[in-house]
Image 1 (cartoon, rainbow, N blue to C red):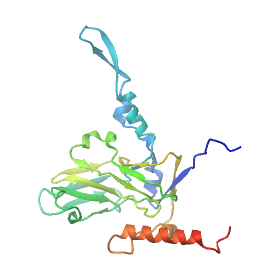
Image 2: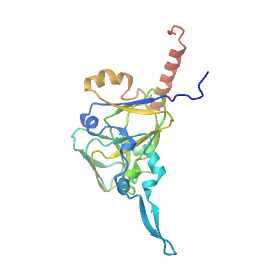
Image 3: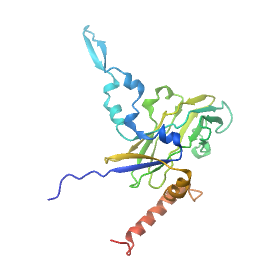
Image 4: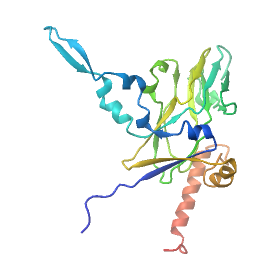
Length: 256
């Protein structure tokens, strides 16, 4: 007799880094370990008085199921080193300077020409993450800012959302828009990105510290560092790999 209950498939997300600080001190972890500190300090209720003079207790956001369930899903990428970014008040394009405490992390950039003129009053920075992520099924992840963790930053910085997968691409850089003429100081361990898998299956996170030699020799064989095309590179690589996977599955000499 067939069971009417189908066992959910476990999805494993492997995260690789050569950065010992990122792995040992600030690893990628389930989001339920990053509930906001201000939220954890809230009392369960607060007193209110009705128009009739009756004292009642109202619930605080400590009971907000939308927030609670939000942090029960996905995982958080924390900042792996303290960072200071100084943006310039004037000038065209992205103009900024930065310094990481670890002395070797870097910031990249997307030219603002890629976005048109709508963002020309902002500075774009791309924090180059030390993590490479692999997930074999191709499930999509919502990539978003952990807004509830950083209420003081709501009006002067933003990490735009996106939908990504880690079967055909593996980088985890953090794209941000900053105000011009402002100094930003980011603490190590600060939640930078919340990645939520679009699946009902169980998701397990595994972090791996590898040597630079292992990373170069083994990890890059299955997780590319760049794309071999000038334009539309991601979609061209994805299409090519999907074709190879299909051909392999249809191969008549494949062992049963």
